[in-house]
Length: 279
Image (cartoon, rainbow, N blue to C red; front, side, top):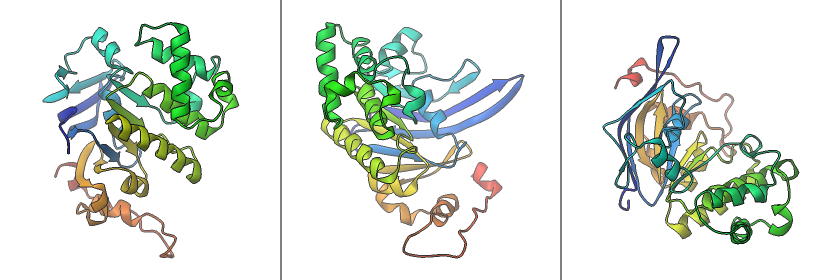
């Protein structure tokens, strides 16, 4: 792995509501260099919670603690709101899961990408529009001039996700957090979006955190995998070695995957062990 862009040691996140405390993330540690790092696990395992914590996007009820939460030379735990605003989008961007809920329905997609660029660059509207059209080309959208003037409801799911990628990458960040960016897409469109994302990450030497529940996808797309269970990282492994995973939770997830070549009467149900919460 290349030199770490991001260092996280013993990250814990609690949510306090009506006097009750919920431990959502517990003692998570990892580093990120110029690589594609996957965070996988079931819904509720804490994957997205970890991703959002890096940009401090949680509500006021969240309590975030860590031994280290460092981005380059910056301590993210101590950063004030002004500093965080200068980081969000500009240096660390987050691609959300579904463009239907992330894009503004009353603004054209071109205006939204342009707005993201202008938020971090002091240039004219004309220059920002030029950069937006070039960015639309880079995410393989044909006829960028036409697409620039469309509203979100006028584009397909795959095009909407590429527009989201364009919006998050146009400020030229150093790290991308992609929160299940292909889960709402069919397989063929999913591969197109992943190809675009992989191409841009490679060209720009970015660090990518890819949050997913799809083990087959991350096996072929990412470099390393963190497996989360109940707010904890239970295994860290090279994506290419996923079939050699040792933790019973990871093995259970892999066993539950359907196969086109090995037909089974019934997929196994994951058997959970209380010791996974503490070991």
